[in-house]
Image (cartoon, rainbow, N blue to C red; front, side, top):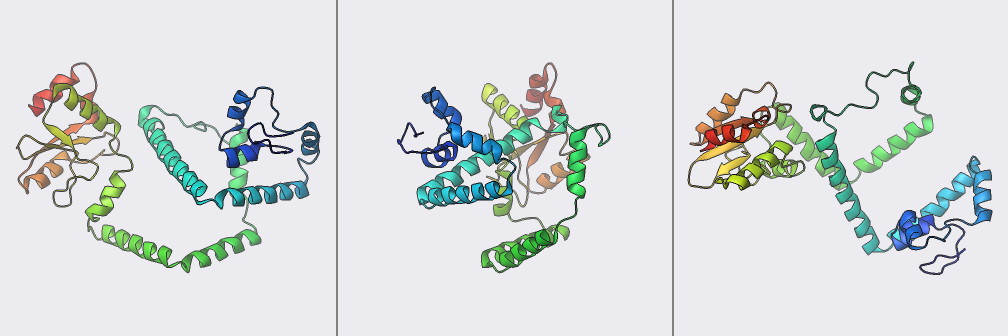
Length: 280
């Protein structure tokens, strides 16, 4: 059997497509409907050797060689890293947007026990299994190797300093907070408020991603019409139990009027007119 793209003779071409041609098996079959991913002889051998430990070890060695060939090219490595970063960012945004309890997401295992569901039972057995001596040794060696890395040591010291500062009530530096804020900003209700600004041409600009700092405070929106006015758009879940007057008083110390809008205020009929009445 040969690859229809490069005409290379292969017994199975799944990994070849993924690492060499950078396409999935599904895409390959769409382009060549009559093509095969594995020859008949290899398919039979695979079925026979599926539970054979020697075959599994040999397959892992083959995968290592294929990966080594692929990652030896700097462009491939760079492309892979870029895809992973983009994928992680999209996955994070998807999780934050759809899997929050306040968005109506119900975990698949809610209300299930290991007595009533086999999946929960298997998960509990796996978690309760004691770690082998070899596993403990591998973790120990990896930890020793990591601790010898000067870059890791420097980053670890920085992280420990930040944790110690936060316990003492010292705010994180703006450059650190900006990196943190840029991950999950703007939030859903902030996007909703941005749409309101565009719709009614309101004189406000979004700065909640760390673009503007007033002392150690980063407001969500600021007035761009000459007024010293900021707007904080608070989510009901993340800011639960907070007193908005504390934030208002802190901004007032620096001469800024602060308007606090809660997510629950941006729901129901006529919410836009109510918010506009507070802003204008």
